Image (cartoon, rainbow, N blue to C red):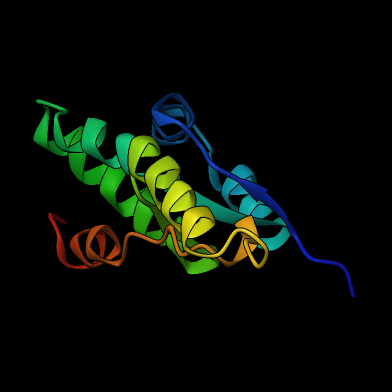
Length: 114
């Protein structure tokens, strides 16, 4: 059994999904074929969206996409986590075992606006 490929959409991808006339085929393809990593920066940009209706749509898209993935910490924190993990035990370091998940952001998406 093969693992699904991982995608980490930036805000432009999320905006495109929200503004597309019929985004459902694209969303269905993502949900069935990929594992998602939602970057913290993408969600922060969504929170900065001044239009409350658009912001709500973006949050709902994120909520749906999180059913096949999770949020990841900001890039500079991810690097820091890897450096620390390497220095703790260089011989056993494996980048795949470093926890970069941002559960607090996932929770905000699940209970947030809309």
